[in-house]
Length: 219
Image 1 (tube, rainbow, N blue to C red):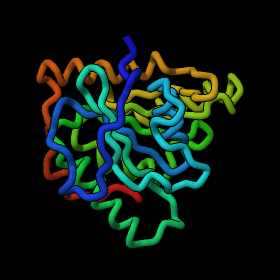
Image 2 (cartoon, one colour):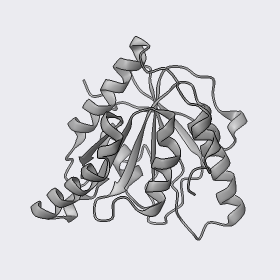
Image 3 (cartoon, one colour):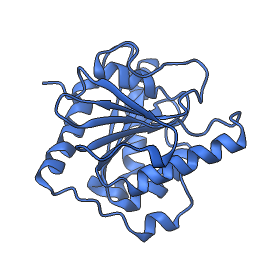
Image 4 (tube, one colour):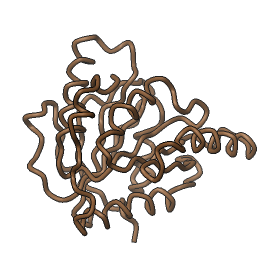
């Protein structure tokens, strides 16, 4: 059964104090603005407008919670790296992301969305270096792979996997195309493993000072 199918919108949060009480494991989705995060979420959920898709980067300004049939939640985080957003708003986003990603005890893992044509930008690295020390699994989804030919797809996947070798099993990587509906099963398999760990109690929150001492998430 599909993990993400029949996801239902639950709530939107603009402030850390408004985060809902933990209720089941949460899968966070993050990515650079305009990397295809909303399209990826909609494709996984089999829904055309579950997550808002905009041609204007930086439109997702809230943390949006979607409840899944199995009791877990898909959490859509604000996109990072859009310079035209006013400084005060970017600072607010950074605080909101920091509070959620470093302190949320029921967080099971982070899905990072990157454009397959431009993976591992400086801001993507900042996010990995900032969030990685928490020890939770990270799944890198290289979107818009339909815009690459076969050799380019192989090169992009190889490049990212080689760059992530030092992370070991903590980081997994895949190609994804919302347009051609490719990569859905692979994403579900990766995230499904996190939920099994969360249910068994093996994926406890092991965040520590290392993560919180680093500069906050990129915005």
